[in-house]
Length: 267
Image (cartoon, rainbow, N blue to C red; front, side):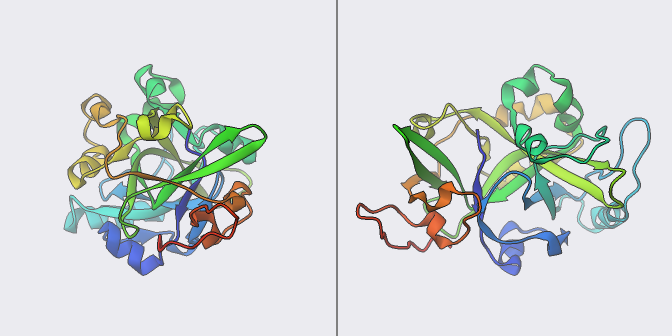
């Protein structure tokens, strides 16, 4: 499972670090050291992504026109798109609550391989890449929950996680809801002492571009969903991050016996 993450870069720095040619819904981005379900976070899409509709009736959206223009000038480019964490399928008719989002923050790779209906459409043509600086998992030790932060060795680097997205129109809103899920795989050794699942991490631009390409069928990219320990460090952090409402550098401060700790330059 992957249910908490961190991304606290300033918008201009994040845009440059991803190499994206544009950023849709940039104003909805809030840097955070403690991102949880139902929160907004940027994902990468191909400039050739299709942002609207289902098989029965296409949802028109002004963003699609802009993407179509970008696809002409940047046919192999990527765009950042701020979406809500927790996959809400296109057929949804009621406004989702927190538990609805929580239930779909992750898409298991075995569910994708087993052709579960929830993911069938998205895995073929609505793949995204979730951009974070790191993610959290917890070790249960008696009544305690010990938090660990998984991140690249270089604090300025990003993690690119395989994801799926969808959009829907709700009667309660005039805005289209864009949402995403993080694909998880069996945990590698560095994570398995905490949890049996971990995010599917994409390690190269070639892998990112391949995963994002809406013209490439899922069967041709499913090999990218694999456990990995490359470019990943586990750092025990303090209990401040345990509460979803807490959001500051203390969430990623390495734990020190005695409680005060010292802030590392993660951000």
